[in-house]
Length: 255
Image (cartoon, rainbow, N blue to C red):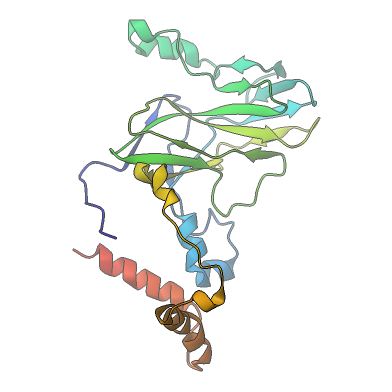
């Protein structure tokens, strides 16, 4: 496959509308310290996946409670719990109208929306995003994090090269009558760039080999190099795959 052309413009640009929101940051190979040390040292597949994309953080400390029928919420600095249907980020709608053009005022994105589906909530990150032409953003839970026991996050691919709107996610609360809290110091999303051309019929171009007898000689040669030779080499060092992959990436990055 040909290398993608190097562009001067950034692959992704994040726009912070809520000033309290922490700016996105590059995801790291240790999964924010959650990855076991042995995996971090020896499993390049895990560390590469962990570092693929950018972390997005909740814009404020807040909590949700779902009783199986109704949703309530509270946030840092509030003195009560509030019924949740649609909620603005505290104080944001006025700030939005002060900055936005006259015809855009009154259209500030909601921070939280409780849907009619049981336990389903939409959360806005306080950001908007734009990607280079031909690129989309996959919005998903942080890779290789321990999952929060109180909710499950849906994944979505946004055509951010042409759709310019709030960067949000949808979650489903998995517990009732228990507060589910979000910490602004911990990422709750990881956004990853994907080629728009792969989001359609391109994925229909695949084939399968249904039986082992269908492997060709070059397939067995590749298996021999990947599995047999390393495991018969008495002097093989641990993490050889990871070391080779890191050397390959460094070589490709050299001018």
